[in-house]
Image (tube, rainbow, N blue to C red):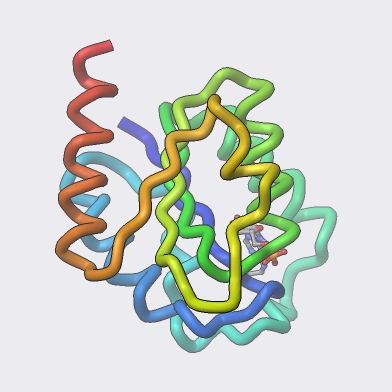
Length: 141
Ligand code: 6K6
């Protein structure tokens, strides 16, 4: 199984370590096409050695190639929102993981969209359980 993990880059890297822990967990179930999202050394400026057209083309190819998308959506990101919209158009199964926070609400473009499987969590262990359930639904398709 190929899984596209989406998480904020230029939207902010506050959760980079969490992305890495989630990616490590998801790797138990298949290939994560986007392991670099969890690279804690990557700043919000992103990689300087490749241009944005290259990144866009490569990432859209990976979305197309993937069997499912798992996104951590707590840190708002234009790129993640775009990827999720495209993935929905392609009919990909999508899980969005969100940590509720006081004073902030998830975009209605996600929370109001019945296509997206949106799951709230607080701890890494809760997120892992949600991922396990999501993968098992895919295996039953
Ligand atoms: C290379 C290594 C790490 O980062 C880079 C360069 N930048 C990007 N590389 C790969 N994917 C990217 C990069 N910038 C954005 N994305 C895609 O958009 C990722 O798949 C993320 O899920 C999403 C993040 O979007 P922003 O708007 O937060 O940057």
